[in-house]
Image (cartoon, rainbow, N blue to C red):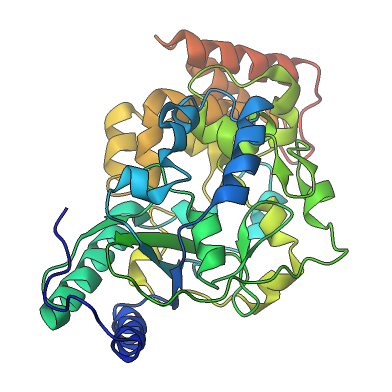
Length: 367
């Protein structure tokens, strides 16, 4: 890691001026808000350990794999003394989320994943911010992240004053809701830290009953094993049968706890063209999706976060959604066409879906 050398002992005024410049440059790069976080996460480390001990991480073994590097930034990147935390809004101009969830023959994709994969986009902009800082003060030590390393990003963003961690465990901003990505720059610059944001959920618990699978087991406590985002994205195996009906038509992630959050009335559509919905995935026909071949899937999800699923798990998820759709001849035919798929994972979910339809009458509108 390179170290800050041009200004050996910057004054408080120098550091304050630099932070003001960082906020300005960050805004020019499209970030909606930027703050400076202190890196002491002792209380968060204790809560994180309790979460892991409860088994709430499910099969996401990587949460424990890195030990304390996730909660102690200077262990992950030696020399780190400050964290620059930045927010990039993503809420797209797309088909109404609630309306799509009410159409069981359509698939629902979490709104963050409708456009270009945010990982590279956010990281590139953070790199440009670092380049701008270095051009002004000289070389300094840093490393940029966008959900790409063991970083406790929500706690750091809270410490940077960007928002508080809500009862659904997402970060909430008073003036922008929760539809945004976070990025971090660990650096060896001793920057003045912002005041951590205070919590404003109050007595509201709208998010808890809104969760289709009851994953928010207590305020500020999420059991990922029950979360639809985990079940449809992180889980590589069969989706537990007890959650399949509750998944409804959600084929990639879930937004329900955010859709009901009162603070999201302040969310505004993003200005980022890269987050514009692609391939009609803001309101796709489930029968058509199940018919995608692997080359079609790869072509239609190029540059998208959805591609990380792979074709096999894509079909798994769509089969579950079709099992929850109204019974029509087209739905049954589409499922039957996948009943001999080479993947045992796909075949098992297709069998479940067909069994669901076997005891269900045909929809009245079916020709």
